[in-house]
Image (cartoon, rainbow, N blue to C red; front, top):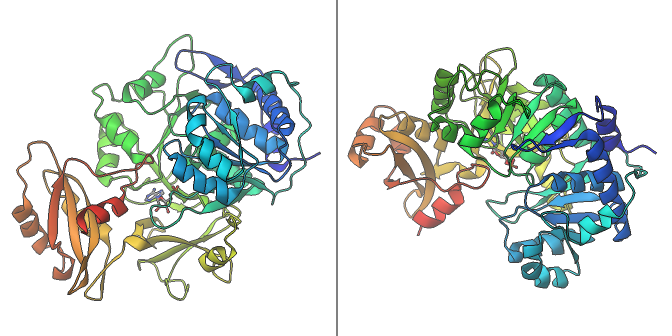
Length: 506
Ligand code: AMP
């Protein structure tokens, strides 16, 4: 029987003995082992009563088993629902009552704290240990290594990923087998992945970046991954270096913070990166300064791409052409992208800032149990309204200006935070900044800048004000400037402007 996503994965395995995952110490898992482990877990899920279409929630630390259980869900026709390991039991309770999964798989230490939330939502907890232990592991270990995959078509759901929900309630983005398959195939081609590739995987796996962009791309090129529990600069350098007993990385996928932290590593230089063919960044804006500094140190231009949970990947800088800092490149093949008037959805001319809207096989099928919300986020002609503001420049590159909800309207005038941040960031002594709108009785919103200085830098409020006077129209000048040691970021490296608004808005 045909299973749209898993058949494709299986058909692209170059050699079953090939290494799928390796850890830094050289321990390897082959594609053959991936096939048998995912089959065993699929049997275990079925034994636990999981039926096609059932959701299977999971809050578990990163490990190869995490990926096998994801693949087991695909094979069993279930809908995989990974949850951020940082979510509290209270937050998990919301996801369980909203998604009504058949069960939740978790680490042993979480079981007690999740018990109440799971009981309230009437969801069974199934533990998976960190080694060869736990109910789910035991059930899988006792199951056969072959599984007859449940038939699933292109449009059937493979996963629900809850959006990070920095504003409002988190929504479950429903992703079909073909959303995932088509996007990963596009990325394999666009980024020239081959079975020879070794991806250094240091991203979390509960998020679209580490789970789909990274893992599915490797699965569909038949390549290998060096799998790390989390980011560590020295370990990335180690994975890029030659050692006879293990693979050597060729590609890194990271969030911008990976790159700023790598730049702090004294060992980062051309020789250290000599075996690397590609560095990719996404999930948050990469500072042009980071792009420049990285290419000076390593001779490699980071390739920035843009996507979101709901759309998978939508744009990418080119593999061969110029990778332009501060842009996210061109729409990927098969993806239609327009910058539109936020009110009407009418396409705007090049160079004008508007709402980024996308359409294509990459775009999700809707928000779980929210038909009205879903309808309001799509235009009648099928374009999804991303909520990101941007423009298409004269060369066709897409530039993101910020989230629509971060737009500041002060005295009736629109201020794009990125423009102000850009000017502040370019001042000597400034590392980075975040510009937000705070409630103001006169103007509706007032511009506020939160600035991170270089250690020991003398730049102060007066110097910033003086510098901005010649560069920005008066209505864009910050009315308040605050200095902080660092900006609050979530695990994907996104600056949490909602936290800043709450901290400074009182
Ligand atoms: P998520 O759904 O967690 O992947 O978040 C998606 C959001 O991250 C997008 O809507 C953008 O606001 C932001 N994002 C992703 N990639 C980039 C990028 N390369 N530059 C700027 N923002 C990005």
